[in-house]
Amino acid sequence: MRSQILLKDLEGIHTIKSIMIKLKINKTKAIYFVHLLRNDGYVKTKRLSDKTRVYNISVDNRLKGVTYEEIINTYSPIKISTPKRHKLYGKKPSLELTLIYAIKTRSVRTILAAISLFKKIDDWTALYHLAKVNHIERQVGALYDISRKIIRTKRMSKKFRNNALPEETYAYRYIIPGLQSKDFRLIEKKWRVYIPFNKKDLVVYR
Image (tube, rainbow, N blue to C red):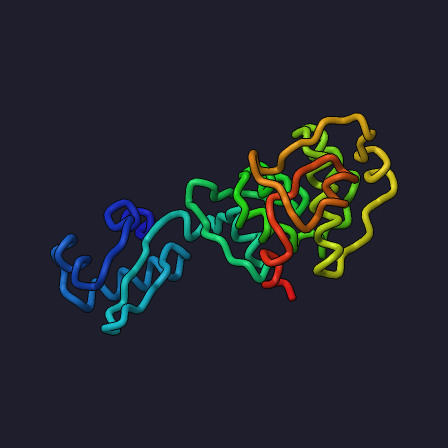
């Protein structure tokens, strides 16, 4: 109960000095209050270049929310920013759902980073269902074939490939509107999907 009252008063970014001023208390008591909040999981601490400690006090710290970007960063050599507005609480999203999210961002960097997820994805039934619902089965298939060129991946299921491969009469689709590859024309033709990057963009995976 004490921590919840303190959290209400102190939620935000603080130093010991700002806590002292806000609560009109001495340094010893301010340090003790930070200790209480930290023990309950509400505090993240950062040390500045001048060695001043800055405390991020928030209920989010205790809930241990995660963003799709944080999941991608766990597996990818390409790091992307993690906007707080996308923080999710409760059950951690699956890698399959995270991949679909990445493709739908239409961000070159996010999609490049998310290619690394193919190393771990093995529930192709779930991935196909999610891709179909979002009308991006071919985009997933094309990106998978790109991933096979740069990383070790688990094999795509025959059912996914057979169901997702288009007929030759199908119109091309974009992953990112207006962008297409000079280096992956065969994959583009196979999936009738324009790839938004070239070989040089994948050097970081080497």
